[in-house]
Image (cartoon, rainbow, N blue to C red; front, side, top):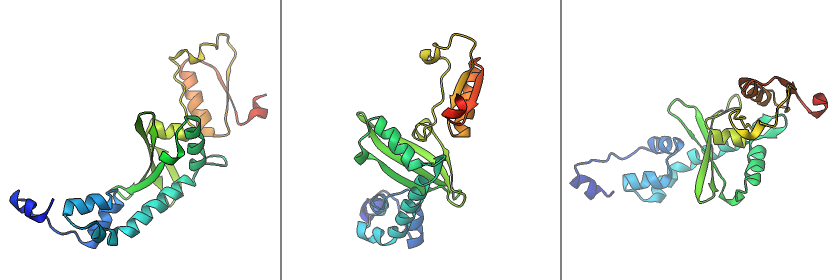
Length: 196
């Protein structure tokens, strides 16, 4: 919107300071959006947007390096799941942005079928902690909750316990809770050798 259009509508746009531009970009706005909203040239906004864009990329990279299972990073897990789901790796875009409470949100967006999919996590950079915010994020971490109402586990017909094998204690706990909620007795094992 140009300054003359704004004046005709009775809206007076106050110019943003460099610090305000950086705060908007750090909070997830693109330089294009900030420039369009202010009626400025993109180059003017990009002068100030570089540092927060670099910070967003750095945080997204740090989050991808966090282990979600023993020896498996978020990037490795997501890449394997996306490959298995038939997602074009060229469509995958990682990003991050900082909320008003100073916590970071890390996202990955990718083409899925005729549309797009997105997963989000909260990320504590200081502690290198990730927490999935949606089912897609859990799926990309390799966490899949068993729906005990489906026919997928109807093959369990006798009184034998269900053995849950995973090297992640959290995954085993989630699986155990889901199966026990369906009335199954559960035995956990950290690896195949323990399961036998």
